[in-house]
Amino acid sequence: GLPSAQAHPFRRCRRAHTGRRHGMTPQDEVVLMARIAEGAERYEDMADYMKERVALGGALSREERDMFSAAFKHAMSSRRNATRIAKAICIAKEQEGNKEQADLATNYRSKMEAQLREICEKALNTLEQTLIPGVGGDAEAKVFYLKMRGDYYRYLSENLEGDARAEQATKAAEAY
Image (cartoon, rainbow, N blue to C red; front, side, top):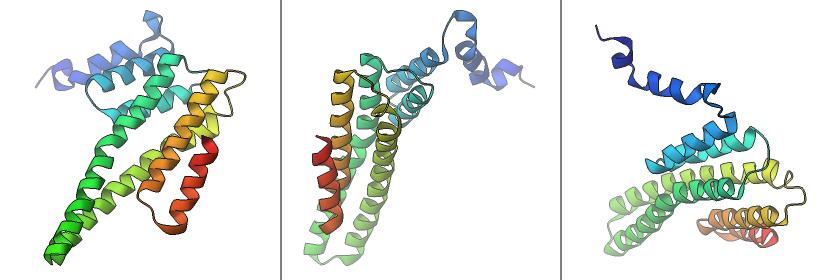
């Protein structure tokens, strides 16, 4: 059989990053893991690490705020683009009279919209339940979080219609 380190190459790496003997705090560790995830373009993982950083407590530094924002923004960007493309394809296929292909594009769009909602809700929950209430007297952080909150309500409203869209747009305006 393979030696333990070869059988489980990540086990050795994980130990190196979770050991406290190098003077890293838990906050430092999750920020480092977020940086690694960012370098690997794994933005959902980055967002999870930054959410974990928030849960560990303490105010986020300016760099950590930027990382928190970038993680969620990048996790959303490909899905926002996919949603727009699927909508355009759906319209084109409907105009061509190809209902089957239009339905497939609509189903894909629905899947991307569900993932967008999930990412937005994760960001909004963290902002509204932890970051905004815990901002204290840091005006710069408060403005940053309120703007981010407005952005994510705006993102939620992009794919809605009617009253639901108006409700999310109102929440975005209130945050701004």
